[in-house]
Amino acid sequence: MPDEILLLSDHIANQIAAGEVIQRPASAVKELLENAIDAGATEIQLIVKDSGKELIQVIDNGKGMSPTDARMSFERHATSKIRNIDDLFTIRTMGFRGEALASVAAVAQVELKTNKEDGAPGTRIIIESTEVKLQEPCPMNKGTNIMVKNLFYNVPARRHFLKSGSTEFRHILDEFTRIALAFPNIGFRLWHNGTEQFHLTQGNLKSRIIALLGSNFEKKLVPVEQRTELLNIFGFVGKPETAFRTRGNQFFFINGRFIRNSYLNHAVTHSYESLIEKDTFPLYVLFLEIDPARVDVNVHPTKQEVKFEDDRLMYSYLQAAVKHALASNNIAPSIDFSLSPEITTLPAVQLPVSDREIEQTRSGYLQHIFSDRNQAHVIERKDSLRNWKELYEIAKMPEDTIRTKPGGHDALPTQAALIATPADTTPVQTNNNKLLIHGTYLVTTVKSGMMLIHVGRAQERIWYDRMLNSWNTRESAASQRVLFPTSYEFAPQDAVLLEEVIPDLARMGLEVSHLGKHTFVVQGVPLGLRPGEEKEIIEDVIEHLKNESPDAVTSRTDMILARLAKTLSRSSDAIQHPAEQQALIDELFATSQPEYTPGGKKTFKMIKKDDLDNLLA
Image 1 (cartoon, rainbow, N blue to C red):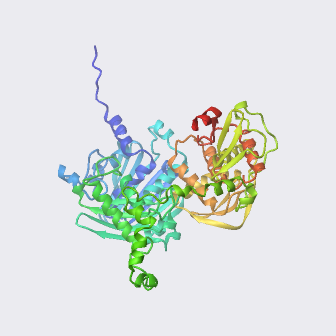
Image 2 (image 1 turned 45 degrees about the vertical axis):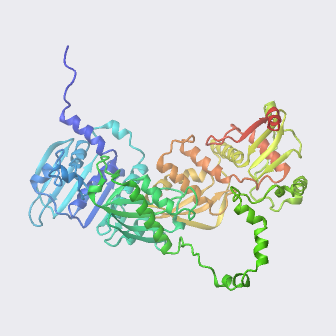
Image 3 (image 1 turned 120 degrees about the horizontal axis):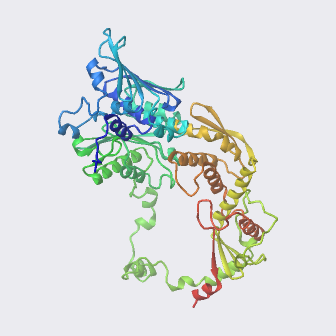
């Protein structure tokens, strides 16, 4: 029998290794920018064509390489940073594994020009799929100029699975933003398809954040600085009003290197407790300096995941630093337990307490509540039910008599046609057998018992079906022009995604125009949308596209329709009158899937008469 285990050729082994490091154009961008930083560059230019598929070029004014070093830099495991195993755990440079250029050269056509000294001849090397095609002297200023052309040209399967141009460019912007934030003392320029996207001059961290994330943050940044024996923390967090419904403006750097860490993210987010809405994310750009021996950056080839020697201690320090910064800027004020002078001067506080008053207090109801064992949580006893009859009489009054809030302007339009429904879910057609509970649930009788409808979810299903029908018939949804158009500025990577879906949003009644750079203006909104809600919808759409969320609503169109439907659902405002309640029920059961929302949540539940009888058995 022939032997079955063979050694892979160097060519195939290099391509496999490259797959761990170079997963998409943004991976090559990251490695090349980090090499330029490690070379001591003070000015770095990034030139990209076709979202990095055609060209990725990085030009720096760093120290450059000698002819021998230039050739060696493309060998696997070649590095200038590691001399022994201990160096691996005390590293402070960006790259150190010696895989970057070797990996890039394995899956692209690479041309490198470099020089260590102005006035002397430089070196030019051309490599295709790890094979050196040319090495020769060339005129070159001090520094390095590297061009990566036709990425994955020799791995068609990998190239085929790259995402759309806008998605790949967004990933490039992500890497560029992280590196540019980490080194505000370095000037950066970025071109895409011949258009300059960023021109960042050397400066401080605050100016770099504003230049990258948007000028609207200029007066909304809170400085953070905390120095301890174990950890130094510095940077900026955003004021509560900068919290977005999308992720992306959250940056952690450990010793200058960008990392992802959900545990530390929770520490910052928890510091904003009660300051921001649920499901929103605060802005922060935070740098943590720690002894490299206390952190392991060798968890993942991209070095964006790390392990700490003591996670809980890091969590505590970070949370305390952010809370202190917010409190110092009167955003999360400390609790003041001192009494106001207006209170301390009251006669009830200043006059002495008489024996009679003490006796009255001891015999009072509250004295027993807080002195009797296990009774401190009781507010009232059995006599708290003495007013039940009055409440019952109020409950029997006609709805119009006790209503204090009129119906909203955004009531759901009624549907004239009533379709047949199964016998056990057909509501009895009368106007006096429905009950609205807490503005959230609608109870109505059916032939077999009772039906409990979640109002918001029912409206969500109705709106979704309406808009989907319009979409399928290629009709544009009704849109109302905004009297005073509102402009919004987004992060660069979010702006790329938003520009891609503008035509889809327009067909759904949300008219958005690109105003320039990363700013967009909303000129029209779907009928029924309240002022300001358009930004929430846009942010949610970006969030879904950014994370490519594999939810029940998977396609882009369905996802946007589902988000619009959720926003347009109006709870109880539209169903205060019996006629409106009946219209809601009729239209719900006329939808394609009345039992579930677009996201898969139940809209109603049947409760059989026997089950009701058993409740009081």
